[in-house]
Length: 85
Image (tube, rainbow, N blue to C red; front, side, top):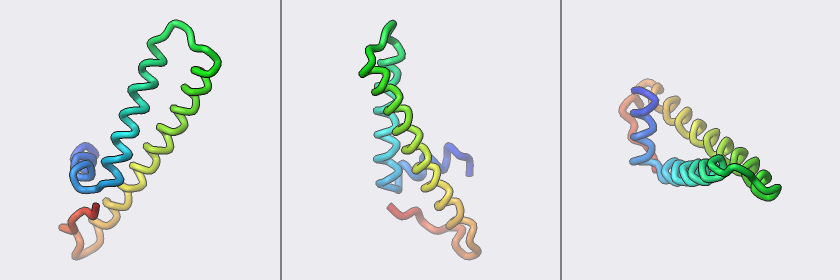
């Protein structure tokens, strides 16, 4: 299973992963808005730094979920285990 296949499966079957992916996308959108500006005020610079940290935390959590799913899938007799959501 490729990383993209796993991501697609988790988006379909895991509520937490789906919610985290949506939050990650929202943060990415806001960061893109900020990066398109010629000048950032001090509060916007702080916001940008905070958003980057949150985005990384969310990505780490999503990777934890994916890792746990992969680990469950390689247990003998559990190769066809359905994802829990």
